[in-house]
Length: 136
Image (cartoon, rainbow, N blue to C red):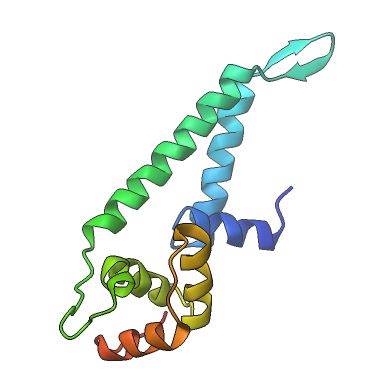
């Protein structure tokens, strides 16, 4: 079954606030799959469509979570910022910093995801210029 590390990962991915919510979610998904399972020759079989429906339910929940996060607009102070990459990815840089990433990690992520070249020093100075961000 699930160990504590997997439950913590599930809790983080689904943005659940409590461990009980993650356990409840896994219990509900298990019950959904069991209810739609068929027994053939003494073996329990779950059809591909049932698994896909479970995945769709999971993705819909994730989409709702992302939508609610998007509504929490980040205020960015773009005054005195001349670097075009920092201007373009300002909101994402601040969001990544709120999630606990430092300037070097953010630099690596921007290079991997967007092929954007910016120094970690520029990111650090940009974050310092913004309102002080408290990490959770």
